[in-house]
Length: 227
Image 1 (cartoon, one colour):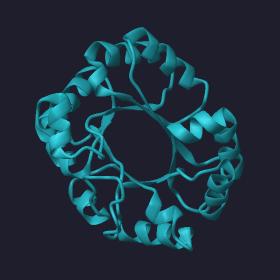
Image 2: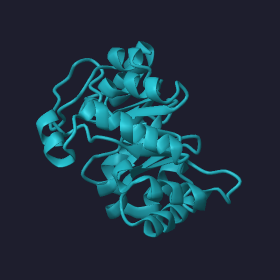
Image 3: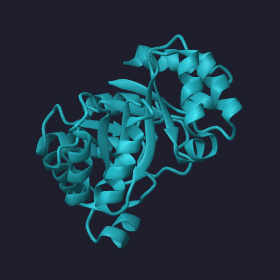
């Protein structure tokens, strides 16, 4: 299991200050929608200047018509990121088109599909998808695997079931982890690091418990020791 630190602070300067504080650690960094829209490719370049070995997860959750998603995925290739994601609810044709477009490259990023956002409660999810989270997440995962993707984004509570209907090698990345039982904030389905490890999660994403801490590096070190 690997730790991915969410760079979700209000400004580029604050995010880069956080990156500098944790530059000695073997962690991934998540660049989300707000940070990328605000700071763009230059932000990714500045991260790599701090530590070229940092791996970057570009969390944009692509969701559009198949050709547009494939165009966007191909543009992402030029950014040098290590992982990006799409929405599974865009459908198998869209996901397959993304992977077909990327197949011409000798190497490509890890591509993940979002199943159910961790901000959804069960009732909210059923209202939108007309199916419970667990079964729909499994379906989305099987669709993603058959489309050639490498894994999915899900909560820790769906990870073990997804592994059982796909393979143990099919990756799961879980956002909103509260490593030591911290406040859930605006997330609904959160778990701690121990639960995530037991659920065979490959990547945990931790944001607020790290960047709101007085000593972020200390929290990162504590999480890594917990693994």
